[in-house]
Length: 319
Image 1 (cartoon, rainbow, N blue to C red):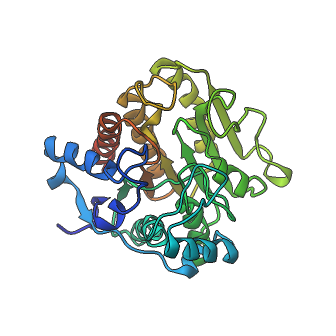
Image 2 (tube, rainbow, N blue to C red):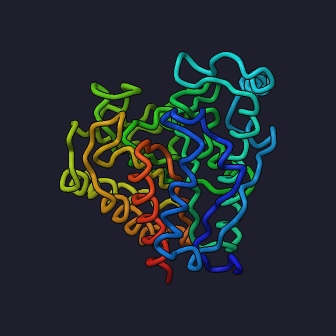
């Protein structure tokens, strides 16, 4: 199937590599849990399935420091130690695995920019905790951060909207771009008083010239779809006023009820709604360019139904 005008979904061994072992919340089985549900619902013929791509060191260093990239390469060879302060262990081949996550996100951006795809979804992406010089929260490299810098340098874009509905605050994205007035960030997440990484208070709206370009909406534990919809209205208005040239959606499924490490209680309807409404805004402001990334989600059934709901919304929104 030609990718032209299609919803492109990335599936393959390159993404399957990114996981911290069977039994770990971020295990290597997450992509297959999602794809099995897509097959069960007979959606595979409606999308264009693409192979993951590996990022180059130059790609990674558009966002990450040279020293940090070199550190990941070294620890990938030994498989020893931590890449942050306690959450993200190294394993042999972790550099290549993380590079595939980034390369896939970058490839999706390139295809959206050239019109080869209308929308795109990558299930293993949206690694929003990684800082420029460190891993964090199971995230080795920050693929949406690399994507923003790539779209700037290679395509000359200036205004971006990054929307994050993962239960965890996207601290790696927020602090990397806190002073950047061209990156509009809207993040609905569980209140940091109750969940890692403990950041993302409503008062964090950006700094300096970027004040007001960031929207953090902390949600109390047990917040449900009704609470999400109230918060979403603010996000939608925020993105509309930003007039972005490219929209990212980090659609972590750990915000659904029953996730083993979070406390929100959404259903997949929240994710379907977010994707559908962002498609409308993408059509209005940025020629339809919308990249959705799976993000977190540690209940396999939840991530399967939430991400499938996102794909259904991307398909339904095609002009």
